[in-house]
Length: 267
Length: 75
Image (tube, rainbow over all chains, first blue to last red; front, side):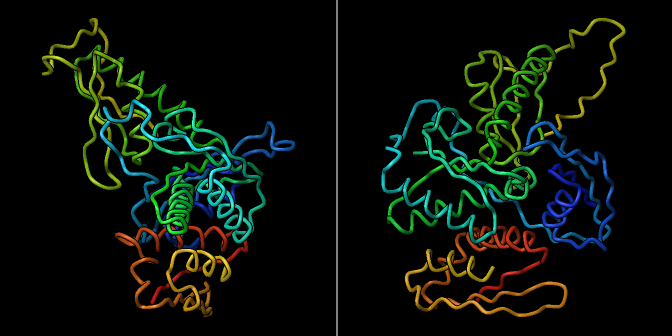
């Protein structure tokens, strides 16, 4: 049966997120508290609670929403959109819609606007970044950022409908995209090192489009590997292959080292 | 929660005056029915139900904040 692990400010919130994700009730799951978590002072210090929730019945989970479509990696590197003035009409509407939605969801948070700076900000694609900051916003991020993706998608739909032209702004909550980007870039570099050494392709865990894009971009300048995506929908993942004459070669590991099958990164 | 659905739907459709949201007690959860003009059905559902699912995701956040569970039915 399906199981998910979720981190949040409190155990209860983590459980709620997991239940929401699985589409199940408490009576339909087994809950294991991995880390009880500690509250911090004014959001500082403290430790996130982590739970593992295992479905005891068939889940009704829906496919994850990707915040953005995945373009071809080579096309991503240059800047392709004009970054809008932060008081441009579309940015103003996005800001206004986001604040309204937060109020209606009963979430108190501050929203600020800035220019995209990194691939996770949608640099080259998004015209602006809306940062949401507040306490206890794990619920707004959701497991693997699925709730945040839905929020960003809807904001873009609303602004596009309002202005009649296609708009892409990035919505970030508690710097989630930025933190994920750091993790993913580190992961990309480590995996590329392994591929380079073993001369074997390596497949990462399934990721949403925006995250796959970060991996592609992180390794685009690496002459020793090439990246591609494989699989469909929620199961789509990045494959890192050695560049050049390809095919697997003999391992260059020294004697005594266990070949051990690589279990894949936890992402 | 009702206001959230109304706000999202009215911002998407061409005929905001035809947007109606009714609430029903489904026992351990609330059921919200969203009605829009026939011509606007595709707009609130979106390609492969993406807009409808995004609205459902945000409704669930609002529901969790109120300690409730809620579902959104369209049509």
